[in-house]
Length: 537
Image 1 (cartoon, rainbow, N blue to C red):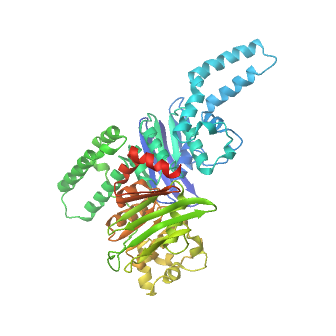
Image 2 (cartoon, rainbow, N blue to C red):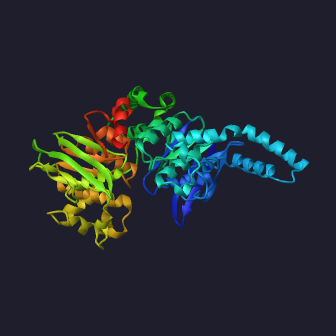
Image 3 (tube, rainbow, N blue to C red):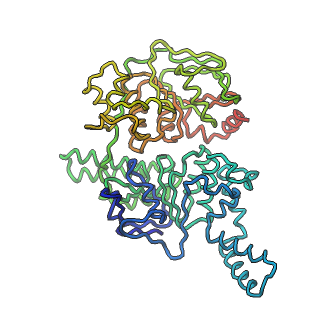
């Protein structure tokens, strides 16, 4: 259990948040959300003791152990993979080291014997005899094969290090677990494993994440950091989002009677509970919602971008035909003999274990790169809008936002361009901000504004949720669901894919899989899993 009392933090004159009083109890998972810069990671650091609060205190249950996901991927470079995981349980690791040091002494005394006996007792109490096998099981679950368990951390890739550090945080089933963006750089299989693990975790978990599907799968509560306030709500992210939006609509409809508002909220809760069957935490989630006081449901003060894509014309019958497309990069085959035809209303997600494959395909289809062999042809009615993976070079010039966007518009009047930037939450004098000082999220919002101006009927989106906050992701997601054109995209966002796409094409060095089906069904199908493995064998 973690108890927070009168917590506040201030940087200079800026108060990030204050007057935070809440408890985080065992058996619950708390998803921490907030706009970029709201203080999510800061809150985690204050709980872990890595950052001193301006006021207030954080306390833990008597004798409880805290574990934190480390962010420095090079911190354990001199240690083996298995040792790095064992070091996550600091008390156990200290006992193991002291015990080994005693037994290696050449002048072992009677006093050493008594101390060794004490250590052996502590070691057994902490289940030390199973420590290495437990650590190995965690590593295997996270996709680190046994043959790498004794490899030095310095020899692993960045993505593999992330998995090891995650195993380190989970090791020994800590009483309190703090995870800051744990799904970053994880593949689909590993994220699914982590969802299952945390759903069955019986202690206290706090997690910061932009992955809505992940939050929905594991969370019993949402902690919202917004406008200097930290508030706790029962339910997962989707429940928080939909209920806060409903409350906002009710607030705007001032003529609605209090009784009618109450009835509407109760009906919403009932519907949501009935649809909770897909959650990995169905039972606990229902309990949280059943106990919910409707007075806890409040309108959100969040601002969501106004993302609107309006095709200039409807796509014709001929959209895109790809024949025998093959591409290698630095001598490595990314994909070969791709053959597919894009039909009306197709919204396709492209998958590959090598993310470079999707980027290479999109760059070819946009005409920015050439294939090794094969052809493709776009229909005459097609107008494309592209959000590439890399776009930093577009923002290098010393230009204002209004001038930057004007490069991509036939209408360069300030009022016209200001409208698009305003929809992307650039208001007032912000439109004169220089492009070379923008944050990652601001750059993406500028790129989306550029796409809106195009009035395209086909969207090419290479990992579109990168750098975006939850509000922008949600708004982008909602717009693409309604988009009356074709979409070709790659994404790590489960919810994005599941709700937008109706067709899946997975590409690899040994061919492709092309399925008109639901994403959840695709990743859970055992026969397809075998076929997918063959793409990369």
